[in-house]
Length: 271
Ligand SMILES: [Zn+2]
Ligand SMILES: [Zn+2]
Ligand SMILES: [Zn+2]
View 1: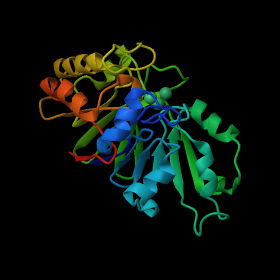
View 2: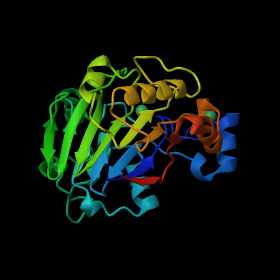
View 3: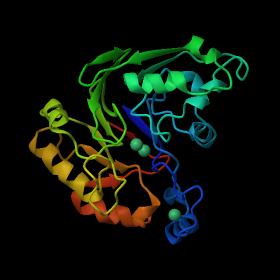
View 4: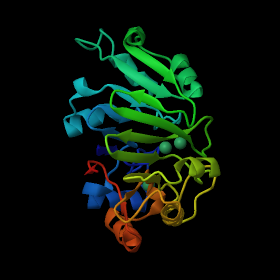
């Protein structure tokens, strides 16, 4: 599975859209991997996780072939992960041929999608919404998709286990503690790529909101014990904020002894 990190920031982006703090200024000065847009990943060029408010920028920045896009998995309704208004542009008023898209999302997120205000509404003709339940497996072409409960301050927030061919990806942002039920579900399943929420930086995260760097290290240790990863598993941190106050290189150094890598916008990994 090829995972392209389109964006790796928390809600406010990095630099924060309206922030001029010393950390944001330092990120701007250093440039490159320190500049982050809102979190989203693209799998094999065809499956998108989260509809970020930056999706239009992603298309330009990475030269995405949107005609290959077939499905979107939504983690939760915080606006850095679900920006419904973008769908207005998948209508015949704005495109030559609207894309048929399948959305996998919680009933709560489906409701949010229905209730949003749109400039055009004919995109509904082109999309299909699949309301998902945690721990139930959904088959979509060559993919097996299982939503996993998150511990986050938005109802019905989900993480995803995605299996394709021999590869397994566990995409886990936004979440605080990995819940006991989630661990029970994951135990013994060998994961090839694990992406974890890094919002709280060097501090421990709040268990019902986000993870911090120390929590990520602990999750990795637990996953090793549970038999769901080994030294070949790629462990990546994502969803960074300016409050972390660290440059990408410094975060890399911090995680190095633990075999964990910070993701950055444009990072592509394959497993
Ligand atoms: Zn977020
Ligand atoms: Zn800032
Ligand atoms: Zn969130």
